[in-house]
Length: 134
Image (tube, rainbow, N blue to C red; front, side):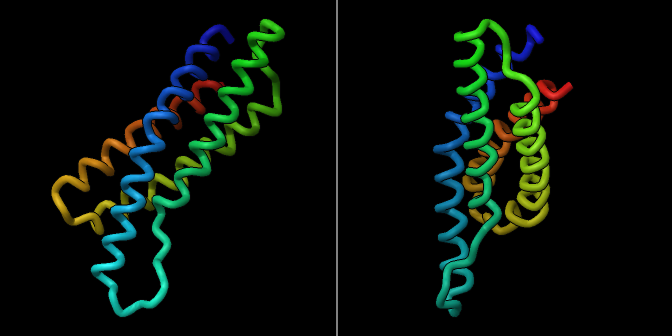
């Protein structure tokens, strides 16, 4: 369990990095729907919108775990493992549709790079969730 504390710090740092990038790519994806499907009166929901949920879960679990470690000298037990498992599954369920459908809809050259830089911290967070589980 000695490897869990640095992974929590890494997860927290990458969540802080991914949040502004995710905000940017979400705004860009809404602009793509506005110009491409102008005949729809309502906004379309993109997959990028759901990326905030696992980022918030991983950041909250990391902060609570680090506070618990500082207070008691050990990492919290099973209930945070369930949060990690849920976040891992959510990341996996989120990243597959992003790679399959959303990347093709961002047709400007710089926007694909933005999407790549946004999904990279999510992949590392997903790996860190998996490493903390086992």
